[in-house]
Image 1 (tube, rainbow, N blue to C red):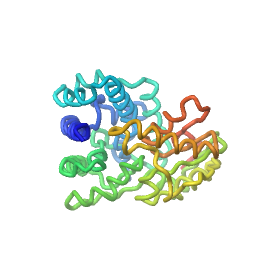
Image 2 (cartoon, rainbow, N blue to C red; image 1 turned 90 degrees about the vertical axis):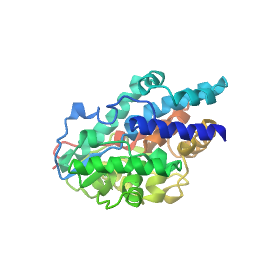
Image 3 (cartoon, rainbow, N blue to C red; image 1 turned 120 degrees about the vertical axis):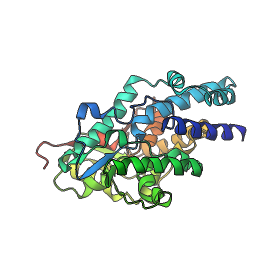
Length: 317
C-alpha cells in the first residue's frame, strides 16, 4: 500500500511539473514533426497525445523501477524522485535510441497516411492527455490537466482532432467532456478517419498477421471493424485470436507501473494466445506494443503496430 501511494504521488508530481507522465525531453511530443513539417492550419488537426512518443520513456521508467525493486530500493527511489529536478530525472531514464526512433517513425507514418486529407498539426498545442492520472483515479489532478490541454487547443483554433492511440481517443472523446465545461472538440481516431476516406490508398507488404484489439478501442470506443476494414483494403489479411473485439484480452499495461511482474505474466499469457494463430502480431496501441513486444523477445514472434504494417500508395487523393 505504501508503494502504491508513493507511485501515485510521483505520477501526480511529474505531470504537474512537466505535463508528461514520466521523465522525458520537453519536445518529446512534437519532435517527430520536424522532419515532416505538417501545416499549422487544416480541416482537422492531428492530436497525438504523445503516448507513442512517450512509450520508450515509459518502458525505461518501468525497467528502472524493476532494478530498484530487485535491490530493495524502490520505495527509496520513489521518495527521492519527488524532489529531484525534472532535468536530473531525465538523466536516469534514457531509452535506447532505436526505440525512440521507432516511436517517432510510427507517428510520422500515421501522419503520411492522413496527409492527403489535409490534416494539420498544432505543434506545441499537442500535449499528453493525462490518461495515466485518470486511469489511476487521480481525478482532481486530471481535471486540472485536461482543462489546460483543452484550453491550449481552443486557443490554437482547433475544433476537430484526429487521435492516434486508444487511451488518448478515450480521454479526448469520452472522458474529457465530463471534466471540461463547454467541451466542443470533435474527436475521431485515425483508423476511423482512414476507414471512411476512400481517397487514401494504402498498401501492405506484411501478408497476414493476427490482430490484438486494444481494450480502450474495443470495449470503450467501439473501434473494432475500422482497423480490420482498413487492413483489408490495403491487402493485409488479419486473422482473429480466440478472444477478440469486445472480448479482447489485456496486454498487462494497466498494472505495468504498479506491479511489473504481474504485467509480465498477463502479457505472456496474451502473447501465447496470439502466437498460436500467427507469428506476426498487429497491435494498435503503444502500451500493447511495449508489453507484447517485451513478452515476444526470444520467441521468434514479431509485434508490429498497425501503422507499421500499412503504407501510403502514391496517387492518393
